[in-house]
Image 1 (cartoon, protein in one colour):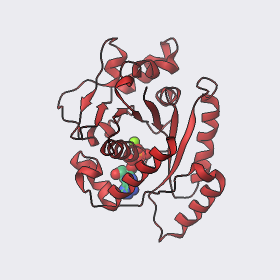
Image 2: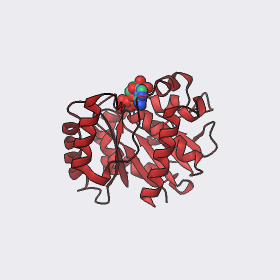
Image 3: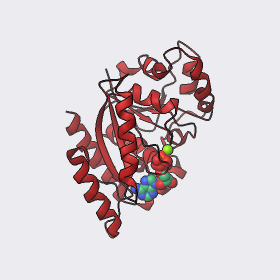
Length: 250
Ligand SMILES: Nc1ncnc2c1ncn2[C@@H]1O[C@H](COP(=O)(O)OP(=O)(O)O)[C@@H](O)[C@H]1O
Ligand SMILES: [Mg+2]
């Protein structure tokens, strides 16, 4: 069975989607069979994943069709995608009427997980029922945090949520905290890093992701960074993160 990893932080703009897509792509380059699942109604992970289909069904469609496995190829042979799109906004409401509504995604992934080593889920910037599903389905979480004021406060809120989710998903681990938008010329980056590392110790990945313009350009080309500019700092750092992650989970 695949290890299911959810990228989560209730804040927007901290690098969740960038991390979901690029970590997934880099793990694929390291020849892990990876499935990226886009659970954000914005569908940004889908459009950044170099998906080759032009017309596709989504994770939302899988909720309404017991036999559908909406798994699509990308330009990377080891990376597949289950797309998401704004239909997911409807799921937020529809799921409220479903029995075992926290476990809808977990049960959907059982249809496909035997084909993969890792399943990476991108989350919306909120703690709604979709995010609860993403965490209830997961073996582990990766929490990207932006090196800025109140970063630690945001993480404390996620940690409190994780404690609550563990009541329904006791195996849920924090696979790692990732420092994003890292800029070592800025003193605030240094201060936040010190504080986060002091507080969370080895849970924080050694590798950080610097602010890198290539990372912000690649989405408009619909590609992960390694297909857009393999020699960029962003590509090197996400590859190093993928290696560190594989070592960490053994
Ligand atoms: N390391 C980085 N360097 C530069 N820009 C980045 C970096 N990480 C993310 N971005 C950009 O910042 C914005 C927010 O990132 P995103 O991954 O979409 O965050 P989230 O999914 O948490 O809302 C996007 O425009 C993205 O391209
Ligand atoms: Mg996002």
